[in-house]
Length: 234
Length: 293
Image 1 (cartoon, one colour):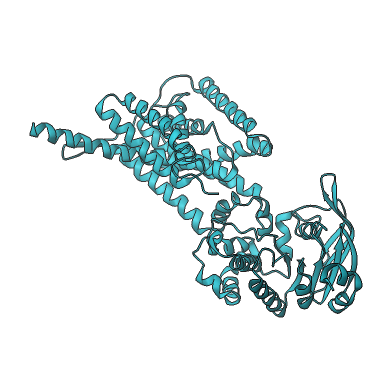
Image 2: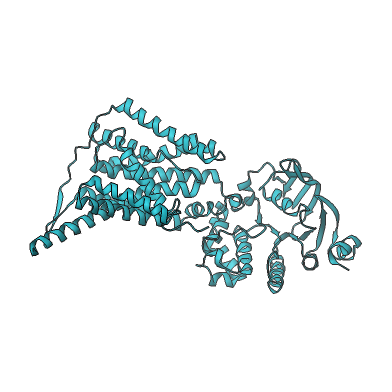
């Protein structure tokens, strides 16, 4: 479904990604793990077009993502839940979800999508007229994921969904990811919470200093010495 | 003594009501300017000059070509909307990432260009529509139809903008964009397009204001100076970019002008309004309702 080949990217003179190759197949859940500043967020941003790779190719179902204008990438079926959620704090939950359905194709199915999202997150329905910025972190994360789902994506990019949340809420977020997976959506998830994320994904990549260091199934990654030593603290 | 009080109260009431009527149009002007500032984060110094061009458009259509007022008005609104979009496309868009002072100077330059253009093209004569609307007598109070019509039309215009901003996808995007510009692309929103639509909307509001002001004031190349500065003061007093603050400030200003004019000359009303503004800038420098961030 998604293919990255030889991708380099950075900000100004700082290079954040070096020759990254990554695949996500339809129906899979894939994790990207690694320390702070390894380039995980940059990786998400080049896929959704927020920044452009300096070299390499990105294709979504055969379509060249790099050649697609950033605001059209969501139409390819890629929805990005950005780091720190990035809701519109002074818009209501309803209006935030509306923004998720902005593109033409999604607008036509706005009512249906709203039902799907409210089904998944009944809490959002209760809070629909509340300003998004006044909700708790967990609720905001639900709203951010809901907003991304409004576009009826094929591939969901989740950037650190557990960041800044209380441990109990982190559990809930990972439960949610499981449910989203079960609904047939393809998921690419970036996490520092290695132990948790390896429980919900099929495969994972380990990224360090902008380079893919290792990749494999969740079981392989859990068993790998590099991952164990550096991230699981065993 | 009793009769004196009666008359005084009637005049006071009349002045209060006239203030409200004036506030409607000022609120409309402030809304247009606030919209541009709140969404695009630039200040159109030349906003009142767009209104001036709209007034000329009304004048020529109605006086010169004999088009009826109500037919000419939509064309004027459309014309100024196109001017607003053109202003954004030609002047603002290339300067979006430039320092604010450059943007300010550029729109300030447009102000002089438009004034000079109007002087060369239309001369410095004061022109009016030649429409004299009757005066409505209500008890002992007199209200001009022009003001009543302006007030109602301004309210309708503002309600229309409110509905557009709250009910449509594009309107919601306009409200969202100033809260997080970078991620708009993730929503599938083309920010350039939203800016252009917002500029056209700001222009349309200036066009509507032109249609209403031309009923009460003569048009000349420098007419923008009579309500441009006050529109800015209203926006700053309400908190730049704050729609509700601008709305309240417009009526506050209009009342000060109207009531100040009751006790002495109309000019003193303006002096009081500006003095009030200066005092308020010390008390609430970020505006009546400081924009929450």
